[in-house]
Image 1 (tube, helix red, strand yellow):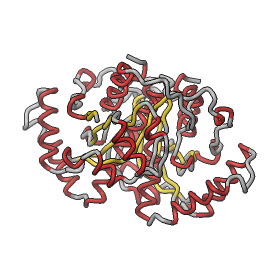
Image 2 (cartoon, helix red, strand yellow; image 1 turned 180 degrees about the horizontal axis):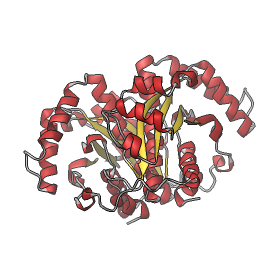
Image 3 (cartoon, one colour; image 1 turned 90 degrees about the vertical axis):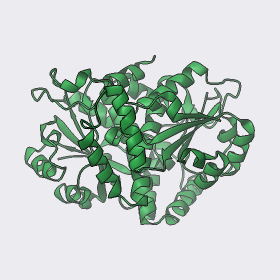
Image 4 (tube, helix red, strand yellow; image 1 turned 180 degrees about the vertical axis):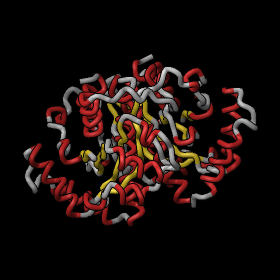
Length: 210
Length: 210
């Protein structure tokens, strides 16, 4: 079995924290790099990562997360956000970055440009939210995999008030909206969940071969 | 830099296939295991993985995927699907599996049960689709990470007719619907894209620290 599978076995939703240990700046840099290198549909990278350390702000966020204590107790709080302005301007900005890196001309990128502009003009607002959220979840899991490799704990949180988060973190200013929240920390050696067996369906229940 | 980051650098959306190489059964077993071990919100595992080898069926699928050749040329085609019946019956079935593994009684699981039943009764059909799709994307990326570690190529495809896929693969019979498609293969040594630089925004453009 590969290292990744072993680390997936190691990982679980720990509930107890070792609050004396902070995730290092070097590890944060790697987290950012894993986030940044995540592939996305059309390569459009419709995301930003918000890293929250400020304790006062985290207290306000906790109140808007069913009061879950990991929001304030964790070493860092990562808020995964999606780009809200998936429009022609965003695509133009993206293509500009592309041509800076690949030296492709505007002409060489025109088919790619047309395909993207056509696709997004065909989606309504809900469709755009769904599409961007799907991409953000790739980035989430990429980061979670890296964390497991480094034996840093994390547990994704869906139970939070996204509109309140956006307001408290002033995300509107950056044209982004919160999608999912990931506190990261080191587990306490006393976590009582550590001895529990992992609950999963059997292979036979979740795989179809055609 | 960790192994995962190195493999993310290795990975890109290859366009050329070595059609003489098939992904082995042992690797397929690990792919299934990575899929199976993916964590999900509430631990609900709202997914099934459909592995398509049958060439006639893959020809029909290609026609419904903007005729992208990797659908038929890849070693295997993985179709990631979501559970459609996110209702009380599904939650009961899930909890039965949970209690078999953890030996928890129905009473011990009652708060967990109540929370899930309340949550899903509060979502409309679109909300359920969004929630389940988000989980499926965690599984997708988990599998893509494993593939990169094993130097097996893959490229997720959004451009397909989900309704047609469901019909061709008879997914309704299993109460599931297709979400995203992942052909897997070995790259050709002649792929002209291999020397292109990776296009990504810079760290500064996608990270906010608060």
